[in-house]
Every structure is written in structure tokens, then in C-alpha cells.
Image (cartoon, rainbow over all chains, first blue to last red; front, side, top):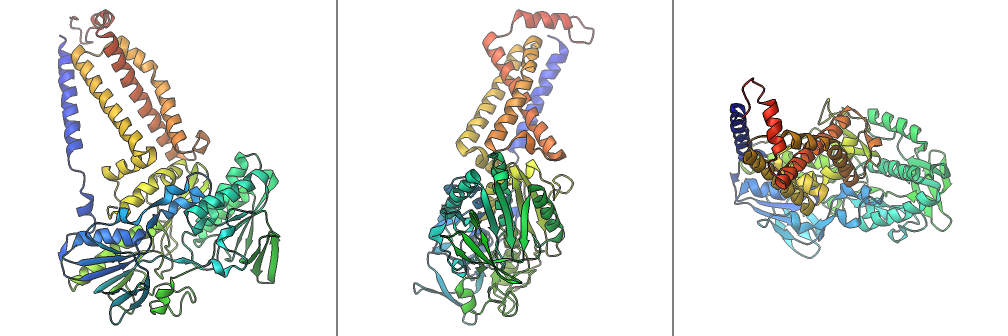
Length: 441
Length: 134
């Protein structure tokens, strides 16, 4: 037997053994590495809302607060993976892609109260539900999400979605699927499509743009783009809150032949005549449409305002929680925190923002149970995987300073339409979102 | 993306392919790898002819892997937009090429056993160190 093969075989087996040993090494225990050591406390923690932020915090706080009584309040049976709704509205995923059960994500050792909050009393430290339950709390996490104010648009009601060219992907999974029904008619038949966004703060300011890009791409794939006009109409002066991104979107819209009409707010719809009315600086303007995508104004749930937890002098009429932008702690009630869409902070109504807000709330809340101060800060991180066509996306990440803060600097360029960003959005994002819900990312 | 742990990667792949398909793919890969190791140890050498034929299949594997990923992710070659995309594409192609080479080699070795041609090739080439072949 040739000596070299013996040694080769030995070397091979040794490598295989080493490889096996490496694979068997415990991977960094994500749970312990994340957050910190557990503490002893008999604090009562109430979490309002079992969405992305609420579920993640339920898991993390359960992990870290030994002895604490944690209750999470949410009347919804379903948990919606909201980042997937843009895909449903473009016919790329079915409605059930975004639907799971609220209970799927909550640890058994946290009590779920399936009721709707009616009032929070910050002085008495109680939460009252519409069903009549009252909960005491030592610490409160506000994460109820936001409310879509469909009534604010005259002549619009949700049952119109999916017919006669009306789309509204934000309204829910079934509405996103119906939006695709209406949008696919537009893709097939062409005509004039108007894509809107509200004047208020909104969750994921990129989604109205993504919908526009996707429908444009679908028209091209159907060889029907010349038979369609695409108009993007928004109340703001710019296409995106971050100037460098706004410029890039402007360039892409130019490239795609999308007409932009800025400083236009959708105020009413005449569905039978297919006429949308916009408020402009020069008064109301009527626009005919064949497809109209509606995203209503957005605001805090009523109980936040009724409980006096909102900013009085900022975002007037929207009611976001009055919290410190860096610690997410309420500015008037130190034992109340906010996370997710409800937070009254200058940026960050996205799932990626929740991912970075959650550890900050956790740090400060856990420290507070021990009578200490937390150290973590939230820098406003927001991420928007901006789909620019099926198969490509721009991974846009920024902070309170409107600085681009890429997660993969030098590898994944922001402001570039890349395949890898599409892969991340279409296939990797839901898994990382789910890991976040479980408190593991 | 903060912690790119193996758990996260597994969760991602389960999401991409569906849990059943993903773990079936993992099982297939493990079985093929074990069979490959088995035939290497059984034959005490790498059969050069089998190896050559396995290599000829590499482009097939490369193309198949890329096609598979693109079908599963609603994308196409025209979506390659930058250098990192090219790297990912080549990585997938490489995985497909190596995977199919191992598969073909293993199938050959299991189907045809250690052939005289392999022995002859081994005798001709010796071990490259000037020492006589077996």
C-alpha cells in the first residue's frame, strides 16, 4: 500500500474527526449571550400588545426576571408577520404566509390576557380592560402597535378593497391578498395607477414605494408597461425621510417612468366614478384612476391618548407615546416603556427597529427592578429592504441622524439594487423575525 | 442581522425550503457524505477514472444548484446586481459542483466497486514520489 495514501487516509480521517468535533461544539448560546444574566425580583410586569415588540419582550423578560409576574394583554388571536404583506400584495406569497397564532410566540410562563386595554392609569399604576379586568403593574411596556384610520378617507371603506381598482395592503392579510386581485387586473389591463401614502407617521415608509416598484415590474413582465401610467402621490415634499435615500428613489422613479406628485394628500374617493380627490396647496384636485393604492392615516390606539400617555406638543393628533428617544422610557412615568410603532420617536416604525429597541427596553427595565440605571441606548436604527423589482432590493439602514448605517459594510452596499438583498428580504427575513419574537435575535 | 448563529441559519433555511424539504436535503447530504467516506476507506484510494467522470459532472451540478435556488426565490440571473451577488452566485455554483462530484463518485464506487482500471491507473501513476506502485 503506498505510504502516501495511508497518511492521506489518516489525515482525511483526522480532518473529519476535527470537523465533527467543531460542529459538535455548542454554538454561542444565543439566549445567554443576548441581554444578560437573570435577576431576582417580584415585580409585576404588564406588556400591552403581543406583536413583534411585545412578544420579543415577553420572552426576554421572562428569561431575565426570575420571580417576576409577567402578563401580556392582547385581544388578537392572530399574529401577523407584517413585513411579508408587500409580497402578498404582489401575488408572490399567499395570505397565510403572514399569519400565525399569537400563542405560537409566547412562553408558557407568561400569562396571556386576551382582552382589549381601555385605560392606563399612570399614577395608580393600573391597566383596565374593556372586559372589566384591572391589572396592577410595577412596570408597564406599551407595545400595542398603531391604528389605521380608514374612516379618515371619505368614501373609502374596507369592503371596497379588491374591486374596481382599489388596493389597500396595510389593512391585513386578506386585504393584502385582495389588493393583489385589484393590482393584477391593473397589470393585465393597464391604465392609470395612483400609489399614495398618508401625511401622518406610518409603519414602514418604504412599503408604499415597494408596492409601486413591484407593480411597475409586474407590468413590464406582462409586456404591458407602455399601456400604463404610474403615479406616486404623497403629502410630503420628498420621497423618503432620509435625504440620501430620497434622491436614490427619485432616480429610480425616473428610470422606471414613475410620475411623482408631491404635497398631495388623498382625502376622498368616488369609487363608482374612479375619481380620487387630493388636497394640495392650491386646493382640492381630482384625479381619475384605474388602480388606486390607499394607505390611510395612522395614529395611536385611543387608550393611549385617553390615558394621557402621548406627546401633547409633537405629532399632534397622532398620539404616539411620549418617550425618550434613546432609552424608550416614558418621560413622565419612569416605570413605563414603549417599543414598536407606538413609540413617539423620530424614526423607526419597522420590525428592524423593534429588534434594536427591545434589548434597550429590556436593559432599562431589568435594571430598574434592581433599583439601578440601565446603560443601553437606541440610536434610531431603522431598516428598509426596499424592493425595487422582483429579484432585487436595496438594503437601506439609517439612524436618527439620517446617517446610513449598513449592517454589512463593504459587502452589501446600501443604495444598490442587489440580488442578495432580495434573497434576504424574501427568504431570510421571516426566519430572523421569528427568532426575534422568541427573544433570540 | 445581529447574531448569525447556526440556529439562525437553520431557521432561515427551513423558512426558504420548508422544514420537510430542508431536512430531507440535509439527510440526503449526510447519507451521501457517509457513503463517500465509506467508499474511500473501502477502496483505500481515490479511483482516478471515477474521479474524472465525477468531475465531468461538475458543471451540471453548478447549473442545477443555481437554477434550484433561483426557482425557490423567484429570481433570475438578470437580478445579479453587484460584486457580492456574483460571489453568492459562484458560491452556490461551487456547492452544486462539489456536491454532484461527491454524489457521482459515490454512486460509481458503490455501483461498480473497485475496478481493475482504477488499479491500473494507480499502478501507472504510482504515488508521484518515484516509489514503485503496488
